[in-house]
Amino acid sequence: MLLLYAGSLPGIYFGAVATKVVKELYIRLVTAVLILLCVVSRLLAMPVNCKNLNWINLDAGTVSALEMGSKIFLFGSGLIATFLILFWTFRAKVREKGIVEVSYSASVE
Picture (cartoon, rainbow, N blue to C red):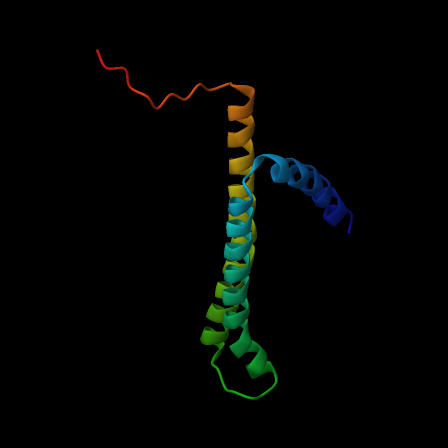
């Protein structure tokens, strides 16, 4: 339980910063991708749940593969969302501070 609280504190800080510097479109995009990947995770877990209720028959190899796929999508979605938000937040902070000068114009002589 303490690990949950320890993880939420940096999340609250980065979430507050991210909502100020990251475009709303990017936050909505990450949320949509996160929800989609979680839905895929739950869809992969559904046959295993049906087997546990004795509604369908599945062999042990199929159950193991579905459970592993479900966990990969579930934890992968969190990691992907975290990476994207942190990437966009740090990129916006770097641009805001002027650490990296980006020039897209070419001089013509």
